[in-house]
Amino acid sequence: MYAAVRTRASNLYNSGKVPSTACVYDQRFSYCLYVPRNYDPASARLLVAVHGTERANQEFRDAFIDFSEENNLIVLAPLFPCGIIDVGDIDNYKYIDYEGIRFDEILLAMVREVESRYGIDPRPMLMLGFSGGAHFAHRFLYLHAEQLQAVSICAPGSPTLLAWDKPWWLGVSDFERRFGKPVDVEAMRGVSIHLAVGGDDTDTHEITRHPGERLWMVGANDSGNTRVERMAALAASLESAGISFTHDVLPGVRHERSALINQGIQFFKSLKPGAD
Image 1: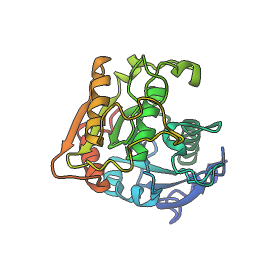
Image 2: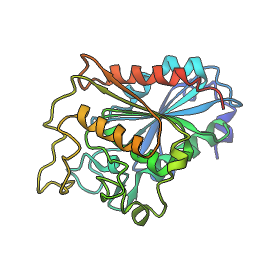
Image 3: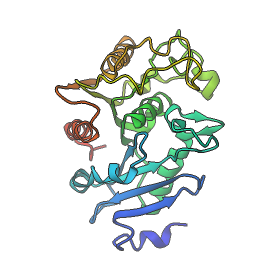
């Protein structure tokens, strides 16, 4: 269905900042792209940039433009709107499975659409998520490590630990029953994993869970009070499973999207992401 588009890839609306496009798989969701002006489909790969709670996916995409041009990367920035099913909801995509919607499957459908549209071969991709997007990114890693070359997980507020004695979303004891597949720890060991958080990211009002909230569970706050502490707990759980990672705590940085994206880009650059 995308053959005509592939022949017009240099068209104003099919390269550079590509306008938001409804996902064919589920048109409640959309994505925007950045396509390098002279992209080469033979070696191009995808970078998925997952927005935070504010849903500023076009701004998120734009932060990767220079990196995209330098490395023949198509940037895919999904939009998972607030208020799907529940008008007041702002967290849906962060926990992967929401009211029967599998946000990992929606993202993978977007990936397939873009690969088809631009004639690029499927290959492991890069992913960066900030804040709410980091919620999605590390849980996507648990589900689909084989889809990832590298993932940068930047300042999630309520991480799922790789803990076999805690239920979802705190841990993964019931992961296989819930998602129909086990956590593939061996595949995770093959992914380059980056954890990043601001050293001064110490506000707790947004991340402290309280009884009566939709996401409340006993133990919801046990991994720490701040994002810094909770990232350390996530790191410890990965380490206990023999999974390697890079852990950056940025001095003097609070919950700052641009600083953490830049740190993630530096991590990706160290991996030579254009190589297979």
